[in-house]
Image (cartoon, rainbow, N blue to C red; front, side, top):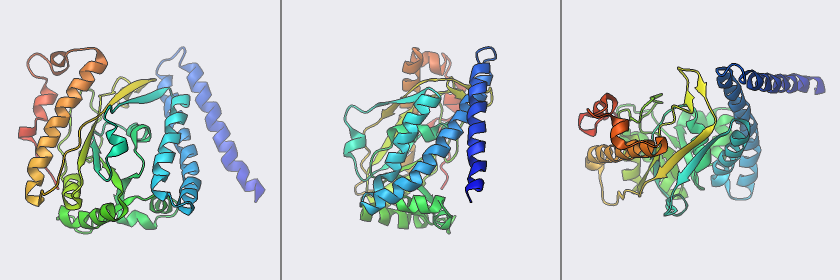
Length: 305
């Protein structure tokens, strides 16, 4: 049995040595930094995932299972700062993250690095959403169940309201917030833009009658750009916007709520990115209206369920 443990240990040792080697190589070959930080990120994620299993069990036994994802996220934040030099800086002067509960937090989705973004800003008593089928998956499903994940039944693919009904009940019963990416997929954009929003998060907030809290992350293509093999150290700003009340709203209001929220987030995304780059908004969008911004305007948006 002991001999079986040698294999994962040797594997990890090899990955660590390889990562250090690529970091050293990056001193003369800059592109090697992409490989070095990618390896460091996966090793950090693996380490924190293992920590997460024990944390979720311990927190559940102590009656604080809903805070397990927050604890694991924070561990990933500090490990990644040490191994990759990447950090996210949160702008939340009203302490909305600390005071607003339960809520549906939504944010723009850029790359795989958004996992670290969540680790940095994830509030207590908040979780990600997941398909109900994942609940039975060994290890991952166990961790998500123990840590208070909100599971969504997507059996009815044509009805977003039906898919969100069970999740809304969980939010109200557990007083548990959730974080969702309404774009549905990563954009990998070099400029501040948003993909069309799906309506699931908005249906969920309306059904649960909880506020929507938009969270905007400045475009960080200078930190991570997979296509160009760029992965640098640096600090990325995050801005937490004021909660949007959904009290009294119904499913008939979801389309307008989705459109207005997206328009607001796009405006803030452009402004935050311009500030981070030390540019004016017109420089970021372009004097003749940057094509990416025009393409993703709220007026022309297609909203998918």
